[in-house]
Amino acid sequence: MRAGYFDDPEVTATEEERIEAAFQYVLSDPDYKLGTRIRGEALVIEAKKGIVIVYETLTGKKLLTP
Image 1 (cartoon, rainbow, N blue to C red):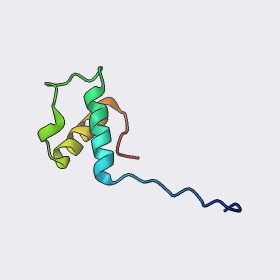
Image 2: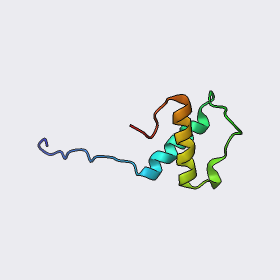
Image 3: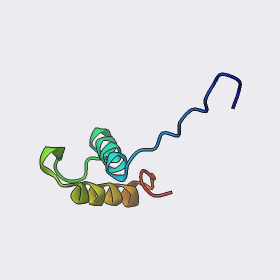
Image 4: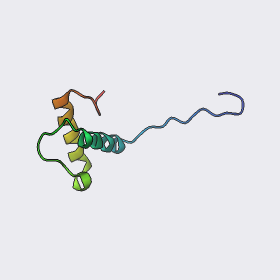
C-alpha cells in the first residue's frame, strides 16, 4: 500500500456471470453455426453452461475451463 492509497479491490465475477459472458460469446461467434441459432432469454444457467461446454469441445476454445 502506498501512502494515501488503498490497494485496488480484487474484482471477481460470479460463476453465473462467467457462464453468461461465455454464452454470449458463443452466440456472437459468426464461425459457430452448429444447429439453429439460440435465443438466450429463456434458458436456465445450467443449459447455457452445457452449450458453452459443447462449444469448447467442438472449437478447442476455452471459455470456462482453465
